[in-house]
Image (cartoon, rainbow, N blue to C red; front, side, top):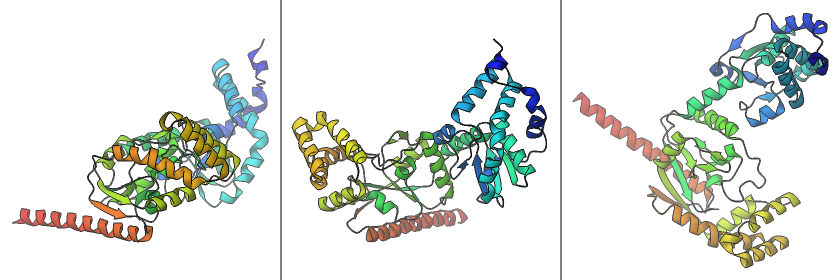
Length: 375
């Protein structure tokens, strides 16, 4: 059987149009140029590729869906590049007007278009947009070059860190959001870094986590300590890069404390069990804890769950599960400051003053050293 017939490729019909899509002037930009604030990033890869990892704030305008891309790949391998290009254009041509219409609101902006490796998908879209009067450019090397850029950035030293520690529910994340120059790893990960941490959250992939983290690190001042919450090496399903993990380990440690009642209240407010999905998710996690809490205790927790008695559940989990583990894990830490987190606004003010003191002390030491050299 003829392979061209299998995949419905008809080169003659599209040959002239292919030339206009694939040849001609093409403006290209580097990753650093693409990330300028005035640019609007357009990811023309499939929705699946986009979800697995993209550039923060990029819009997804897929040239093909997942099945179409797979079919084009088969044609490329079995028949050749030209036949794959023809098939790709056959898929896209009926949608050209719809594609352009979807971008109408962006026609006054500079568009930076990218695909996987800076190949034909993004090149064809850039030329199409340029022909239609858009200001468009292609990202050199596509998402692959951006990914390499991220990995290289994450190997660089990070700013000095003030690391917030404290037992579960003390309000570390809530406090972090009140502080300037902070890194919220749980926000980037889409996970609260606990057994129940994915409830009401959308966990990120490792690639997206690292992209969001890199974006934020580059926005931070280099010489002033940034605030961060103490975490293990893993946040949900993603891993903290080694350079950042080392900086956290050797940062300035702060221990937060709050009453048990305050911690329970904050956890109940944060982990809202408000629908069937979150109820079933919580129930499943509780059942998985039989080995550590015992069957009888877990059944009691599940009964409280069915009655909506969340305060009792949290109370037991803190005293019998989280607190003992936290105490063991943090027993060797030495803290530069111990601070009440009962009032988060007051705690935030004290931490900002504490950071100012660190900076002043460091500057005085540097000034003294410079004076000694001059003398």
